[in-house]
Length: 146
Image (cartoon, rainbow, N blue to C red; front, side):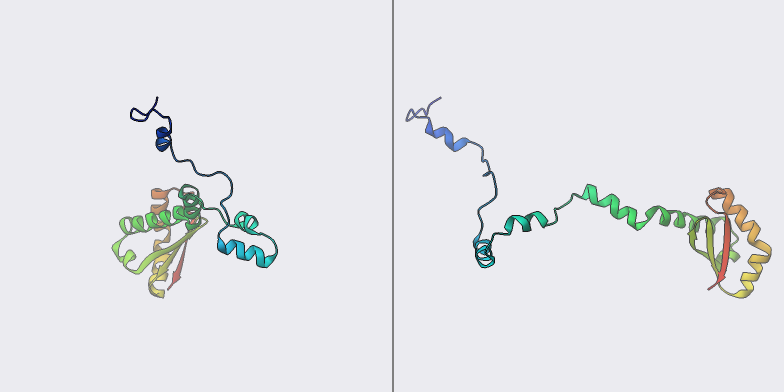
């Protein structure tokens, strides 16, 4: 098809898609000065050693794995269940502070409450938590004064 006014084919060149140049871009002034000063051009090597950008789809699973969100979520669920399953007198003076390898760590206000809980209520607390979460999640409870 030709231009209706002039009859030439050159008018179609304006409407072609932009295509970027292939190959490495020409060196800028800084790169030329560094290459001259060094006696060799290290730009391709520097570009190859530069860390490549990664997409968030690749980075996010690694970050979430490092944060141990599953462990924190289970600790939060244990804390919620602790407040709902147990006597308010116990929850006022004792609270779970951590969970590791099946052991629930509980901090108690003072030694009087520690003695009360360990001597009379430990088995009851353990049974209630095991009924709620299963025996494989919580094997035992360790109480500490704190």
